[in-house]
Length: 110
Length: 120
Image 1 (tube, rainbow over the protein chains, first blue to last red):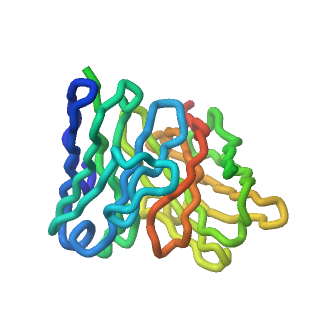
Image 2: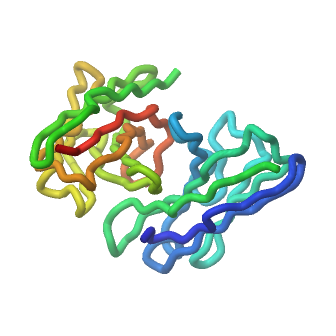
């Protein structure tokens, strides 16, 4: 059971927008910065968002992040078939004193 | 270009040991914190361990504390994970990852992973 809760799967058509939620508590998302990762099986995970809403260089602005209270959201616009992957949120948990991740959300671009 | 290449995975016996290595290139290794994150078959990501950029501070998940040891050799730009007293639940792909600093708690570059299978 992951400390952070994500929906197991989401889907949308090419060109559409999708959001992926990440729910936690006051010891993690509520008081720490959130990051998001894209992972295609067999490859290296890629950082998409850090510090709640910052994009590393090279990440297109189709990807966005936000945080409100004890939840965070990853948004992806202009969906492409290449966006099909697993997406994970992550943050620090002050009570557990460790990095925690969500269980992952599989994105299908129909 | 930042590159992280893991090695050392394979089949290990329950109760046995395995040492993973992560060769880093494309950045000043000693300026960054480094960590290990694993993914068990069919499961999500689990943080395992981290090492501060200075190498003086180590951090472990409770699930591996006392069994795993993280270290680095700055002269070789290499991160290690010594895994002892291995259990079946340690079976996973192990990823090496770089963190801008440990207090940032996110990883900006990852390797492709090395599979460790613990089975008799």
